[in-house]
Image (cartoon, rainbow, N blue to C red; front, side, top):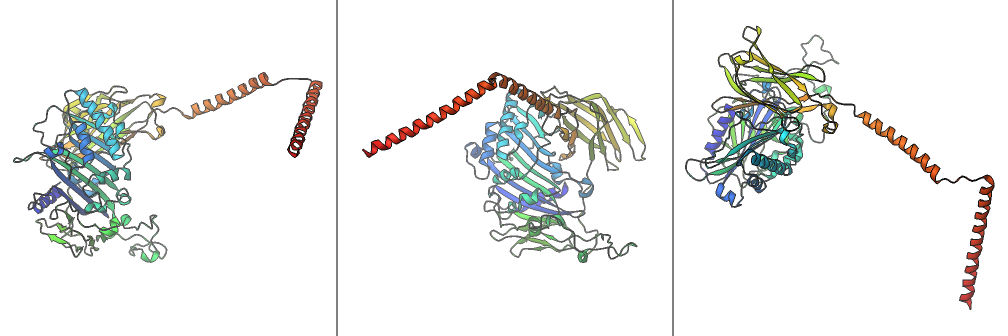
Length: 589
């Protein structure tokens, strides 16, 4: 994404005069239509590999470093994502999708090992350790959820002296991302979220956003001159609804707007005192950092570079911006970007009043996504179904070449021979063509029941101004009753597909996750059987026990036993009374 590339160049220029600093953090704010705001937090720290191996940790988190050393992990990428990115309204993804993951948790890493078995053993060690560090269910990434991509991912670090590297990839599409994952994320930062731009990260605001993604990237960086570094890049991207985020915490439940504060379109013929049609506002809404996040930025992090720790805003040059008095505006070359250096100890706030003028040519342009992708499950019934993937190329001149990668669970068995393609050209005519016309290369690794899932990688090409639809059939397996989760009727999660677009810098797109309905038994029947069996056993056991223990006697014998029992009780009381009287007499003497 060109926007983030320009901002990165700006931040690099700002920090060029202070190369001794090994930690930088910044925040980028950009309004999105119709009433949203993109907030991108980036935290980057570097440490030399020599000090890393000698356990000298200053900027690099010690907890994460020990895990990577123990698991022989040379490069790590971890993603926590919730929500859906609306590419039609918000344009292309931040960071070209490189910092984004699929819904839930996504993890891939390069592990150094001699063979595949050793690499998988280290992979299990890595997932279980990260599970405890981030309070996530990463320990559930087993062999059935692990794949080995061939062309979808490339290492971003400089692996000069590394040996045999193995790439392993795992996903948990059903994982719920919450505050339990944010707290360990903040603890990895040098200032622990107490100062700097990280002080804005609050779980109430972060997980109330329409879309959010937390990313952690660890990779070696070897410059042309000097020793190699280990770089930790932590990123948080959120899309906040301005009106929803401005609601105070003391009023968490949205309430109707009073009648005197409604903006109605009086030109409508049905407008009346008790009828209001909302008036569409063309001007941008006012907001401030304190209103959206419920707090201001608590100064700058003492360990960060004071010149590189900035807050940048991308908006129209005509938009009025009111930063805090103690902040210093940095000079940038981009007319749509304004950057402010955070004060060392004073709090920082940014106030953007409502823009009165309508949209003009000076507004920030939103980049059109290179490719639109959609993936759905079609068909009906409990035995079979189908997958439909739609690729739309909005460009009228360029052909899009990309890699399509998807991981299917073992209980979803695809029929690759049923793969078909349909193209809709510029003229709107839809025709079915052989799939080989668009698929250049195919890598297919079939799944094995209860051992591994299905891996499918396709090298595709979509012509300009065309829509290509791929479809294939699949069969649903029948599970054992012990393999069903407690919420089996909800469905089973299918991991999102990953699309890697070939470019100078790869662009990544993730589709949404899917819900697969499997043949599910009626789990109330075992409950009914247990209840009925328990009732029968209780009645039979009680009757038999009663027959074995109870003693049957005649009426005369019962009366005699009762009389003997009464006579024995009276005799016992008389003896006890006599012993008591004798004891008192002995004490008197």
